[in-house]
Amino acid sequence: MKKIIIALLVIVAAGAAYLQFSPKEAAKGPQKRGPGVVNVVVTDVTEQVVQDRVEALGTTRAKESVTITSKVTEKIDSISFDDGDMVSAGQLLVTLRQNEQAAKVRAAKVQLADHIREYQRIDSLVTNQTIAELERDRLQTLIDTARANLSQSEAELQTRSIKAPFAGRLGLRQVSTGSLVSTGQEITTLDDISTIKLDFSVPERFLGDLRPGSSVEAISAAYPDKVFRGTVKSLDSRIDPETRAVVVRAEIPNQDGLVLPGMLMKVRLIKAEHTTLVVPESAIIPLQADHFVYLVDDSGMVERKQVKIGIRQRGLVELVDGVSEGQQVVIRGAMKVRVGQKVNATTSEPWVTKR
Image 1 (cartoon, rainbow, N blue to C red):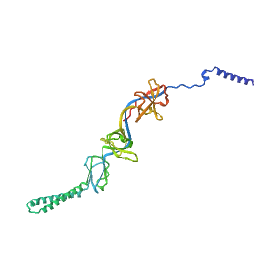
Image 2 (cartoon, rainbow, N blue to C red; image 1 turned 90 degrees about the horizontal axis):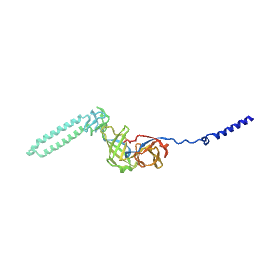
Image 3 (cartoon, rainbow, N blue to C red; image 1 turned 90 degrees about the vertical axis):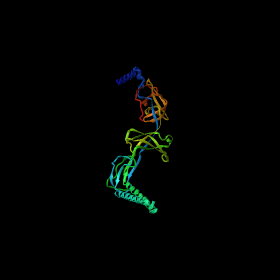
Image 4 (spheres, rainbow, N blue to C red; image 1 turned 120 degrees about the horizontal axis):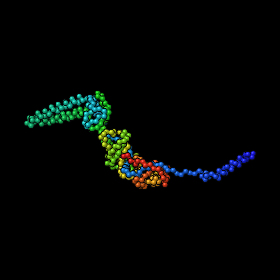
C-alpha cells in the first residue's frame, strides 16, 4: 500500500515539474501559422478594338433558286448535264421528243411562204386594177394567220428544249433518258450561289441600329475557323408580333462556293467598333451589382479595385472605368488573395480577342 502511494506522489511531482520548467511556447498552447505567399497568375490590362454587336442564328439562301420542270408530258430524248454542273444562262439541259412539233413548224413555214408568194403575184394585178382589192386583203389575212400558226408551232417546239434560266449550279438529276416526264415534274434544281443571302431575326429593340450597309460576320459549323463577311441588304417590312423580331437579310460573297443554301450560321451584326481597355473574364469578381478586380503592383502587393464593365466579347470584358492600361490584374488565384497581401505573380501572355 505504501508503495502505491509513493508511486502516485512521484507521478504528481513529475507533472508539476514539467509544467513549471517546460518552454513558454508549450504553456501558451498551439499557435496559428503566419500567412504564406500565395501564387497567382496576372496579365496586363490591354487596349484592343472591340465590336458592339448583336448575335443571332441565320439560314442561308441562294441569290436565285428554281426547280427545273417540264411544261409538257413527253419522253426524254437526251440529257445534257451531270449532277452538280455549273451552267450558263440559256444552256440546254434536257431535250424532249419533238418530232411532231418540228413537223408542225416545217408545215407552218411552207404554208406561210406559199401565201406570201401568192400575195406578191396578185399585188401587181391589183395595182393595174386587173383584180379586186378584196382578194389581196383575203390573202393578207391568210398570211397573218399563217404567221400566227408558225409562232404557235415554234412555241410548242421550244417547250421540248429545257434550258437554264440563269447561270448557277445544278443539283442532282432526278430523271433518265427515255423516261416519261410529266407536266411540273422535277428534273433538277438550279441555284445561283455566287452571292448568298443570309436571313436572321433580330429583336425589335435593336431596330434603331439596323441599316443597309452594316457589316455582318457569319460562322458555319462546316468551317469553324473561317469567318464569312458581308453586309446588310434589307430589312423585312414587318415585325413578327409573336417573337417581336424583324428578319434581316444580308448578302455574303461566295465566289469559292463554300456556302450552300440551307446552312445554319452564327451571325454577328456589327453595330460599331471602338478601341478600349479589356481584361479576361476570369479577372472580374462580381459582388452583387458591382464588379471588382485584384491589381498587383511592382512590389507584389494586392489591391482591390472597383471597375465599370462594358461589352463582353469572346472571353474578354471591356473596362470602362477603374483601371489604366498596363496595370496587372489577377486572372488565376483571385479567391486566395486578400487586400494588402504580398503575392508571387506569374505573368500570362496578353489576351487577344478573335474576330
